[in-house]
Amino acid sequence: MSDETVSAIKLGSRQPLKVSGNTPPASVPLAFFEAAFVGLIGCGIALAVAHNQGTADPTSDVTVAAAHLGMLATLSMGILGAIHQFTPVVTQRPLRSITLARATFVAWLLAAWFLPLGIGFGQEAIVEAGGFMASAAIVMLIVNLWSALGAKGKGAPVIGLRFAVIGFALTACFGVVYVFDRQGNWFNLSGHVVLAHASIGLFAWLGLTYVSVAERLYPMFFLAHVPGKRHSGLVAVSAIPLGVVLISPGLLFKVSILAWIGGVVIALGLGAHLYSLAMHLTHRKRKVDLYFLFVITASISLIAGMGLALASALVINGNHHLGVMLAAASITAVGGWILEAFVGHIHKVIPFVLWSMFRSKGIEKNLTGKQLMFGDLYNHAVAASVYGLITAGVASVCYGFASSGPRYLVVGGCLLSVSGAMLLVNMSAKSIQLLKLGKITSRQPT
Image (cartoon, rainbow, N blue to C red; front, side, top):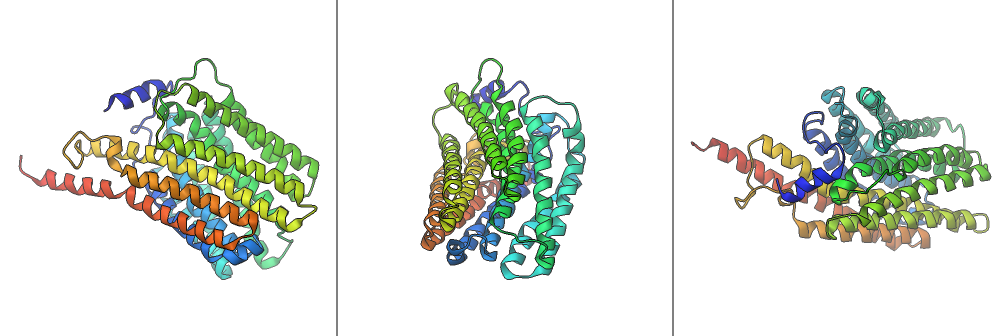
């Protein structure tokens, strides 16, 4: 193990990040991560296909389908992989069942594709099947994490993950209502209803999970030790769900004052998260690298999303279409925050998980015969290209919505799709080669 890795474990936290013991087999999180890369490919293609409808009406079926491929098949898939990997780490308690984790993956994979494809092609039976599979996946997730998250535990990561799982369940319940409404037409799924749903999914589920896990990963991956007691993380994981509790019903029932108060509380929570990041950056011992760029760019995307949301709220009464398009751009930018952060962390997490797996199989050398290091498990030039493609892709889609420019959705969608394909290959090609080499070596007589 390198000196850098040893330093990371010493500085990272009071309880080092384990890759064995309580954590599940590498195949569990890796399945979610690889599926998320495929989801990004699908999301990019769907955005390019929906470019005209998306800039005319962001709530059209094809645009909603593209958004669901981004939120379900990409971001939620990746976050589910992270929550299966890191819940045992932060709670020091294993999952209830590895079989249940694999079943959750299969159920969510089907849901994440059935729902958007059913919506996009107007196939209600497929939409309903997707809703059923999503409900099953969430029930299995809660059962699997119940003993770990239900045990006594302190600290922002544990508290945040508890709230995040609740947020995930609420997001799904909201979605199930959508599924039934498509048949019964019980109420008008107008823009404010969609925003109420999006606020739960983006902040109480995706954002909160990332903020919670980051409190453990920042110290390790930045080689940073922030002295004294750190309250910013606790403020973040408390304020974000509280703000969602206020803003979502405020948007749903058009209670403006409640929505504004909720928005302010969420902003305070996100500000606390950014402050925590700033403290880790101030005390970091690692030089500027690709991970640094991903995390900083993610933060910029978050700030842009908050600014676009404010602009939307201020102009929507005077110019409804512009307000709606700015809201779509805001959702894209906040989604870009999670995407940039996820991809940045994945270039650390996947090698960390794979390195342990290879060592357990007796593979200690890289493809050149030298000692196997984390950085040997992917191509760094390709990773840098992925950073550029995702950043440009998110920016192009945001601008396309904000300016009602369909060509920018095409460009952004294509860039995101290519980045997903590059991620899929880059994070697996060298590992496959190493596994093949290990099998060949193991067959040779000693």
